[in-house]
Structure formats: C-alpha cells, structure tokens
Image (cartoon, rainbow, N blue to C red; front, side, top):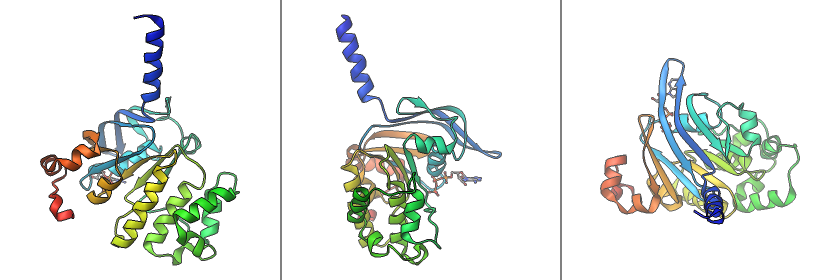
Length: 255
Ligand SMILES: Nc1ncnc2c1ncn2[C@@H]1O[C@H](COP(=O)(O)OP(=O)(O)OP(=O)(O)O)[C@@H](O)[C@H]1O
C-alpha cells in the first residue's frame, strides 16, 4: 500500500477509535467474581445504553471504569490512554464524570452549594450555569433550598447537573429514571437529548426500554458479568425476538 494511503487509513482509524474501550475486564468485589471479561466500546459522541437484567453487572462496570472498584484483569482505555490503574481523582480529571444511582448529593447543603462543590475550581462559569438552568429549570428555582427538600426527580437532575457543571468528555449515568413519574421521565429524556447535542459522550445504564430506545445510538447488553450483545440501538429496537432473547422483554408491555 502506498505510504500516503496507509497514513490516511491510520488517521481514519484514529478518528473512529472509541472514546472508551474495555477489553477483557474482570472485577472482583471481595471474594465475589462479578465481571467476567467485559469487552465494551463506547464511540465518541452520542449515547450508548448499557442494558441488562438486575444483577448483570452494569453498576459494577461503571464503578470499575471510574476506578471505584479496581479491575483485577483487563484493559480500560479512555481517549487512547490506559486508565485502569489510575486513582478515581485522576480518572475524573481526565474528563469522566459519574452519576451514581444513589446520586451522591449533599442533602443539608443548598442546590447552589452542591454545584459549587462539584466545580473543579470552586467557581462556576456563568454561561455554563445559564445553560444548566435551561436544561434543568428546577435547579434555578430551588437555588437556595437544601437539596434534601427536592423531589426525587429534582435530586436526580441536580446530580446530573453536578456531573456536567464543567464540560466533560464522558459521563456515566446509572439509572437516572428509576422510580420517577412519566412526566419527569419525559423532562429527563429532553435534557439528555439536549446534552447529546453538545460534545458530551454518554454511557447510560437504563432499565426502562422506552427511554433506552428514545435516547440510545448504540446499545450493549450485559449478562452475568459479560457483554452478550453490542450494536446499533435501532437494530435492537426493531427486533422483538432479539429483545425477548436478550432482555426477556415483550415490548408491548413497555409501551
Ligand atoms: N458490594 C458488593 N458486594 C458483593 N456483591 C456485590 C456488591 N455489589 C454488587 N454485588 C453483586 O454483583 C452483581 C452485579 O451487581 P450490579 O449492581 O453491578 O448489577 P446491575 O446490573 O447494576 O444490577 P441492578 O440493576 O440490580 O443494580 C450482583 O450479583 C450483586 O449482588
């Protein structure tokens, strides 16, 4: 192959390289072997949904990416750099934010204080804040109230706002719609759509298949600590027998 052609092929490969790639990742929690060789590629831009039944290992995968559990084997690359051995603080500094299912907000502090603490320099950019208020109006409305007084949906929105108070390359979000009323879920979907329109790549654990289908560009399905399916969301959304096989879903039940 002529040199110029092989150079441009390499350049194309670099452009298409996933933002986050897990290869053969195992995680043990104490004596328990939870992840059994996870291979997962999260493309740059867009939203990848991680689906799977309860206990499949989705939360463990997010926590392992974030360095909150240590991978016992395998490789995790973010933006072309190995991160599996880095402390969580360095992984966050590299540009990954994590919104745990437990949300991690401080109930006794005000909404404002929760956001100030999440900003790296302790100072919030005014334009960014205005954009966040547009995304989640409740944040502005309850600015001076203790976060503990917010509703479940508002707390969830605050926890996402904390993750994106500064631009991030990748956010990992664990079941943000769990237990929320349909109207609040619709707000959440709208906010994720807007977030998708920015440069942020999103890896979303989501059990609500309608939400997953509405937001996902790509999907990966976990079972027993492994990825058993990965591909375009459109393909899974159109294939009921694949849904049934992978997720035990009857889509009609979810509409
Ligand atoms: N701290 C822990 N100690 C022991 N086992 C754990 C711990 N955390 C998770 N597990 C086990 O690891 C497995 C995967 O759990 P994980 O929370 O990652 O699954 P999940 O797919 O996120 O499920 P869910 O939707 O129920 O949260 C489960 O069998 C769970 O019981």
